[in-house]
Image (cartoon, rainbow, N blue to C red; front, side, top):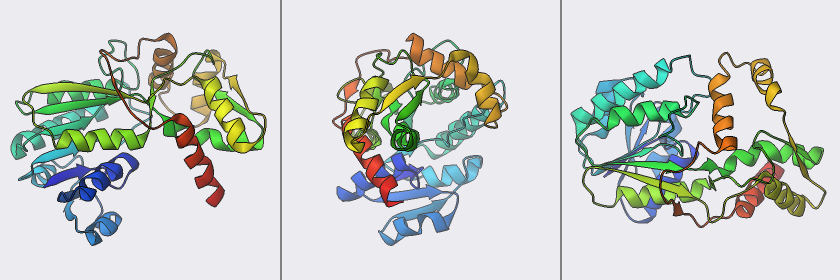
Length: 287
């Protein structure tokens, strides 16, 4: 039995799909039974647990071969990251009580960075989980290719995509959700001792200009990237409703300046950026 958190989301859903296709038993961990009804119909056991409830999470993680752990994204954290610290303490206590055979935690590229930024939330959680004497793999993927979903509309409507990644010709480590879910499912079924870091990127690093060129081919129209000036980021994010945009700004700085990167030699995925963009374009046509 494999317990999967985040199964109603994209990555968790892919992890579950891979396990089920291999004939493995899956326990779907979610806050709302209605949201996992489709998984229950497919034969998954269901455990209802909130990320803030230690006893419920411990019960959900109990008696399983392995656990896939991912936390809900928080793009506007309170200064000092109290939300991440609370989640870290909850997860640590729940896993310590349940003691599953092994754990795969979905972390991020740059979790080792010393500079505080939006991804520091994963640094905090990794640090707490490292205190456990359990086999834990910290899966650190690059920038999600699927973030380009925000680019489909401007590419189609105006042919100009605003880019926070800059310079536009600089390639960034990116990876598809399909590759992340596949590697996570493979890790869950491996055997190891202690703690390990598994870094993951796609077949090739991707520059913003390459994304524009791929959109141009898919949409059969001219498409270009336009940098969003650095000095406009904070007021722009505040205008969009953020209360504490500094961590997000610093994360973008980290990618652009190169200090958010991998520690070692990352594994390579197989899904190309063009494949992801085609899926996004086709999906938005249908909607």
